[in-house]
Amino acid sequence: MAEDKSPNVVWHQAHVTRQMREAQGGHRAAVLWFTGLSGAGKSTLAHAVEERLHGMGCRTFVIDGDNVRHGLCKDLGFSDEDRVENIRRVAELAGLFVQAGVLTLTAFISPFRRDRAQARALLGEDFIEIYCDTSLDVCEGRDVKGLYARARAGEIPAFTGISSPYEPPDHAEIVVPTGNMPLETCVEMVIAYLKSHRLVGSKGDT
Ligand SMILES: Nc1ncnc2c1ncn2[C@@H]1O[C@H](COP(=O)(O)OP(=O)(O)OP(=O)(O)O)[C@@H](O)[C@H]1O
Ligand SMILES: [Mg+2]
Image (cartoon, rainbow, N blue to C red; front, side):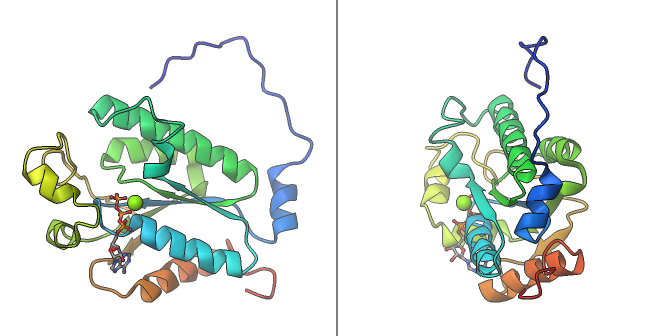
């Protein structure tokens, strides 16, 4: 947990509240937290779900692991300590998006249960964990970025699934078999969850 180095700052209350933003947007805000091995399909599914939601008139944003490591988290590597801090920052960032009334989709391997638990603790009922459940074999077979081959060759230290553990969720809100189900069906699963939990669908056009 990062040290609090600014104990004397006071929270300033916004006049435009989250509830006002949600009412204007016509849908609830939440964090769809996609987790799974590299190549499991987190980014692919998150962006496909976002496209559907955008088409339904929702305010959306995808926070993608690779992208934040270009900026917000460029000072962090892949040690256990840095992975923890990476997830903490992302959870805080996602929480701000929620306050902005946005359906926020995050695509991070987030391999450790305790870190996802920390994100859940921070975000409370706004946290919806989506496990992209795919075997290591399938991910390695896909090897979209060529990283598994390099990890097997010993070129990448602490690579999740090879030389660093992935701890699957015990109680994910949604488990999507992204290894053996067509993308469109996976998208439908997520949208169906959002509709059945009344996060989207109140505009009449959704
Ligand atoms: N049902 C599916 N859902 C998602 N991706 C799928 C599915 N079926 C096949 N794929 C393919 O699997 C690959 C997943 O790659 P993607 O970059 O989305 O993984 P990732 O989980 O974001 O990995 P990383 O953690 O390295 O960013 C893509 O090539 C995608 O086309
Ligand atoms: Mg990705």
